[in-house]
Length: 76
Image (cartoon, rainbow, N blue to C red):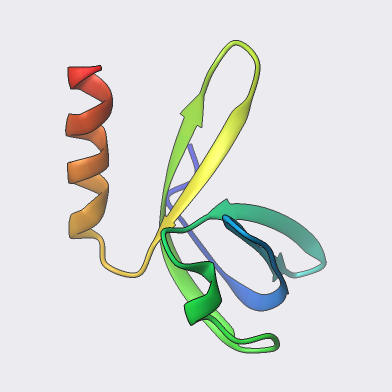
């Protein structure tokens, strides 16, 4: 499991950002990726969701939001 990532914002897409962490690009889903700026250094707490057809990484500025995501997924 990936608990957090810290790196430089290299791309901003509709639902995700690509974070450069020592030369490796992590695509991270965020609620508002456009709040970030290209080239900015960013630290995100993450939730890694593994499905049969995908491995997704969700990023949060505050650690407390991760528990809320876990509750939502359990209720599904």
